[in-house]
Image (cartoon, helix red, strand yellow):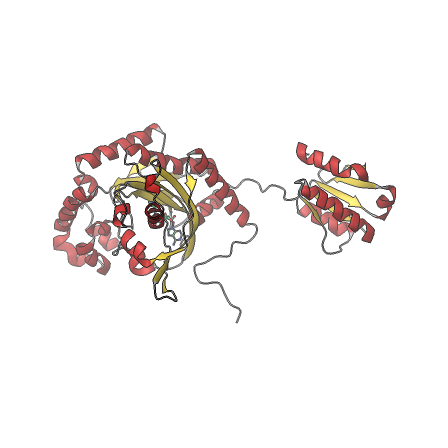
Length: 423
Ligand code: HAM
């Protein structure tokens, strides 16, 4: 039996890869415009980083990590997300000693052992941003505006930012108490997972997708009901900055993110049309995380978006730019001598940055012309025995069909100039 790729992974083939490159280039441009610098961290980390960072009670840590013992008997985990790694690097590489805030972005594969379905993979790719060392609400707004701006530049429609404040440890304690009191008589109606969450992390019950649990928690107190003054004024300032920036947001008091590190602002961006997995981006503030993993008390905020889901939205909405013609010219050489001469011309042009191709299969003139059209080339450069004798090259414009002769000695310069002028 032929070996197959692991379940929940994908081969990205030519044709699709160009779409990824377009998305990645747009991301890099936005990050540069906003003053964010790239960070690259290892694909695997000590398991403890995610246990402490993401949280012992989360689905990610409980059920979804690819964890293994290395040959030195150390427990390692393929990274399920990027925030914990960036915070670890902030501490380990002493980025807190640089001028603050530190504004970083990353892009790369993440791994979660989830049940694969449309929009949900076991190896997926995230682009994420983390800002460390700034606690002001303007940072929350900047980060959300960056996401919004990226989606505008990509031309995505039908987006909505869902926003909530999950408070700080102080106001969360009050919320926890009120929520437990609200649920105390109906605890037994909750699903098994939520019954466990009741003691360990009741906030996550609000996020359960089970319709029963949703019915039980209808009207339950939300974190917005118990925010302390500081968290409330922080949230209000974020909202007013976003309104001023024209971001379409909706306050969603039931938005509870699936990772434990969040404080204050939490948000997700939803897009219609891509099916059940409609969250294309999720993020929020995590003012206790750096300290949790052993660093100095440092506020942080960021987000990550699933690139597969962003690409799915771009595909559904037909938002990819027309693929540019790959080749500017196809060199068509007929006969052995012409091939030698043509090969030299092609390489000289390539050396000058002109994308030129040549037949590699020994095909006929007709088949080579067909291939030139298929590649979207602007010109066919035809060199047969007769042209070689007369020291000329035929330059056929594949759009108009017009054909001219160029002296071989001038061919490279003429074609180079045409490419420079974009004709
Ligand atoms: P997350 O909500 O777990 O947050 O993931 C962020 C995004 O990654 C999701 O909204 C979704 O688009 C994508 N994603 C997650 N799991 C999968 C999957 N199995 N297949 C495809 N796409 C997926 C985080 O990871 C946080 N680290 C975000 C963050 C950064 N918060 C603060 N800074």
